[in-house]
Picture 1 (cartoon, one colour):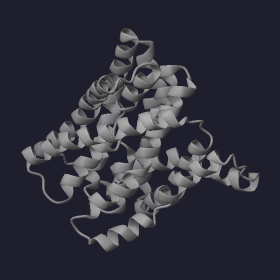
Picture 2 (cartoon, rainbow, N blue to C red; picture 1 turned 120 degrees about the vertical axis):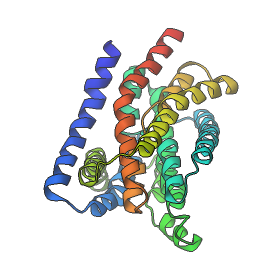
Picture 3 (cartoon, rainbow, N blue to C red; picture 1 turned 90 degrees about the vertical axis):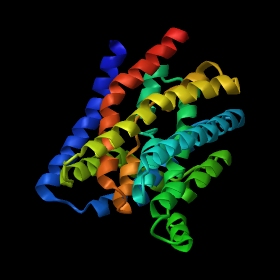
Picture 4 (cartoon, rainbow, N blue to C red; picture 1 turned 135 degrees about the horizontal axis):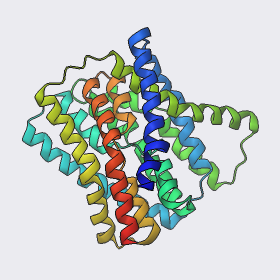
Length: 310
């Protein structure tokens, strides 16, 4: 019960309040959501990524373990969602929207606090979560952009968009500067920190605005699609992660952190991609909202199971 209440009051409730503010803004003022989306993609998200990577200690062994897990986990998730896409016979942008709703999960503003709660601020578990967050930031800015544009643009246009994303350059820069023990002048570090702090609030308000301006007419078919996405993300995601850590022989705090990292709801990135490139924004918003609400129960169950097994 304590874990449930903590997740509710410290994670889900703050997110809900921010989303509610965005919904109100969307209904009353109808702000330009494309501008907000660009701020998230090109300014706030890269700053947050740089800030966390530069200030987190990560060993080479841990880096290798987490990368191996991540690529296998993504491959298995992809196979799983592809089976659903074929069974449901999705076409066009809906195929990519469903993939993104399952493959991209909220490893930053949901995953980091949950990690700190579940493992009492353990530096090893935090390093695991930061690495997962790094990849979950990089993949939407590369594969994610490709997937939502593949059915309506040629490779040259897609490549130009991907190479224009700051995250592609920010991640290696942050890792290299940390490796070289570089010192960043306060005149540069301070604005980076300010921009990083703005990411979560702006992304949540963007989601709320999208929910506020869209038409809430959910057909039976759409409800099934959103429900399927949520089950794939919240139930099968952690089950796949659990099987993987067993097969890879990963144990202890690293194994537990990897399982918890896989249990979080659909990422805001799926909404930002959908809005920025006009690819099923209503479906994307609904999956983020439903998976975030239901994660109160699912994430609590995952953490409780790890406590019992540990």
